[in-house]
Picture 1 (cartoon, rainbow over the protein chains, first blue to last red):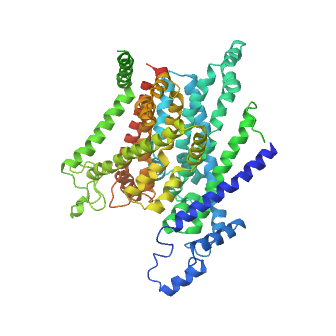
Picture 2: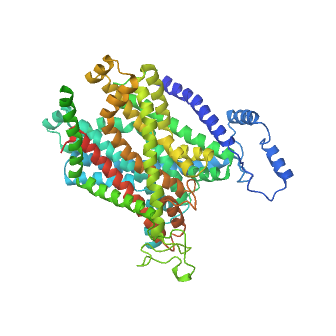
Picture 3: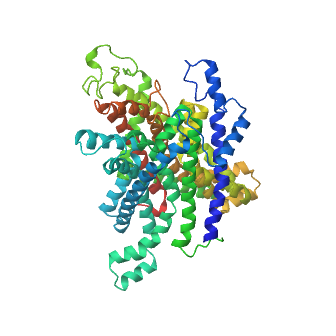
Length: 306
Length: 291
């Protein structure tokens, strides 16, 4: 078990190196750079700035400099947020996005599992049809449409909740709900399919015939087995949440990773794009590693040789 | 004589699938909505009096609420929103279909090589798909967009890059299953070249699930394009898609909610319809859930 964790962590390094290299090349081979907009600056000044950030050197040199700093944990500086290092920005932005993602994930899991289980247990009934209709609607509404609707209804019309920034728990409700919507719908469909598969098994019939109440059977015998395929989608779920966070942080003006990533791409803020991309990559790799490790805990029949 | 006897029932199954599809209420409504939306987009090419770019200079028709003259109201330049939404549907719906086409071509070629090219090649190609799947679509699209620019072509390339994996997996699975069927072995024994086996025997028999997967590709492409344009990293004006219209509208949410309402409604209806159509097609083509 311990060896498995260590091995997975070591396997992260080449993946992250590959992602860093691809992103680096993608950003630099495009004509244009972070200081193009400032046309009023005299060329000497621009040359000076470029020299300061090593942008005047050949690409291979820039790459080696960047990788050298990266190896020592220094993600570089932002060209647009003056005097702030990327490490600084990420230290502020990451906790915000992690909290948002955690809230949304909790909400999505609760709603998705409940809806999916109910739909499967009541399969073929109007309740099932309604739950599946809800989940189809859930995957069909773009995040920004739901966000705009929430802002309009709860913020501007009913004036119940704040619609921007990230200051109190009240500020977190609308963004978390918006972000949770599409993963909840996705989880509901998955749970339904997974529960339907388990519900026909012999051990479920045995549990019922020995007199175990329906609720107990669902909790102890059905859900526990049905959760294995559901747990394996933590990787894709993380990807869905990251994608969603771009939109949600944009519309609710939340100072998180997604928002910094978008503005950094728009500004060609090289180091900040690299930094945010790498953090997203780390999150994804960790999520996938957790899935691999949790296979063993959830289902002892699966053994990965450590 | 025998060949005809084998071919006949296959035809009937496909015909039956369409009948079964029409029996599903949600799929019927979805088909109707898609037909109307595509119809409007096509009709707009025939010179119907729409004016998405021209605008009245009179002040009273700037940012007007929906009325008889402007069923969806007008924007801050006095442009008719109904015309703009219909024009937007041209771009948004074409992007959806073109992405499905790209996904079909890349996915089929990749999946065919993996499913028919031997175990070593298969293992390598499938690992590639696993990696491509693990990356968040929007992140890849934004980074690729930086490289190839944010025009319609750039968006299509970016969308194509994140959309082909599902089809590829499906084609591979179908090919792996089908290549040991008797009719394929018979064709191989007769000395038919590989490409002919793939296109004449394997692909036609795998086409049902592929169509279902592509039906789901269209709405996710429309969603991705509109999301990208909405956050300002996709198409930008004067290009006119539902996403750019929603982006315009979001800035005026406080004062003129109609500007974001109508483009959003069209995105929602289209995506919902394609999702229901996909569900319906899957049920209609899958013998296990036959109605």
